[in-house]
Image (cartoon, rainbow, N blue to C red; front, side):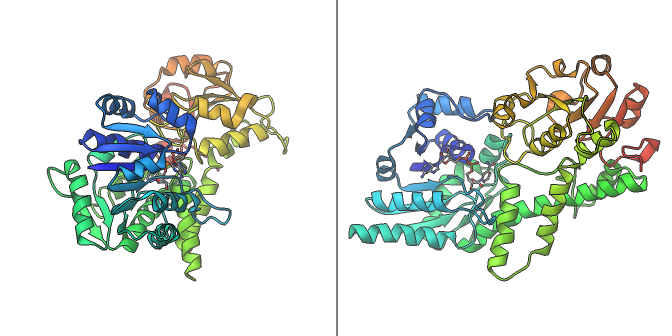
Length: 452
Ligand SMILES: NC(=O)c1ccc[n+]([C@@H]2O[C@H](COP(=O)([O-])OP(=O)(O)OC[C@H]3O[C@@H](n4cnc5c(N)ncnc54)[C@H](O)[C@@H]3O)[C@@H](O)[C@H]2O)c1
């Protein structure tokens, strides 16, 4: 099938590579000239495991190309995907200017029947706006052409995006036309050969499904972070509690790890956008507002623990003269994405408190330099930043932090303090190795992360 994808970001590139991998002819369009020039030369703008190899292979075999020329891309394609950003506007609602801009571009260029697919995360009712924008362009051209608008929200996870796309749990298609649903089914069939996991529904329900999924996951995270806070204060161990509740098949184990708060390009903005959509429908989404408030507070917890551990009575800058080594900057492992990463809040808090901050991340150092410049020190070696530091704090659970050289860490730190925002280590083992180990929500077994 001939398809074009607007947006060469995380979603657009992964979708383009995977659709090309299954034999389709894919043109990827972006407005960012440098990005397109680089992609043409095989330089991939983001880090995502397996993506580079897949892009290079399909490019070499002539199934995948990159262009700035929207008209050419639309004319050559039956299906046009919209996978551009939907950042939060000032009031928290999803800003649809890029999505509707693409809809207009398609209306200006189309030369026959097209299926226009919203893959960006967009509020309920956006498909109607896309349809209106395309129709307006056709009318102003004096043209009359058929087209369908489909909602096909994307559920991939950064860090495992290729796998998620190639072997999806489900593909949601919001569609009001049987013929178009069949074409979408044909496009996705190669990804569900063992069993169809395609769920076809009306367009508005498909748009809502994406927000409901992210809101549910964010709710689980904030819920577990509050259980962790309570465990610390009541002498319980959140990891034991996780086991205890996760074994209930109605609950399950996923998304029940405490941490420094959720971040990334999706959860924070989608939670905000759903609260705003609810408001516009005169509905107060009390639960999600609390989820968001809890998350903002949670981003402060690691810095609070460090100030409590190392702070001087100086109220303004209690960490003056202290050096903190940070492991992990991206919002989660296996990505270089730092959008809304908890590390941004934590490090700003440490700097404001007067600390010297050193940071390591396997992929996000370049991104971190855009945020912090020379206000912090960076190293691509996780051990180099430890020399003489007063504490190590773990912000992101990259694999290389799971089983590190503890002797080296202890020998390098000025004081053997580890404040672990991901509960990577066993408190008993850390205590017997002579560390002052402060995890989240683990007071069981006589080892207390937070002394009240
Ligand atoms: N990143 C994720 O993990 C993820 C997962 C599921 C859904 N989503 C959703 O998918 C959408 C895209 O997210 P992303 O992370 O890929 O964004 P991104 O910021 O990585 O990429 C967006 C790309 O769109 C390009 N663009 C903007 N206007 C354009 C136009 N008129 N024509 C062509 N290209 C244009 C930008 O230059 C950029 O390269 C968002 O709505 C997001 O919420 C993202």
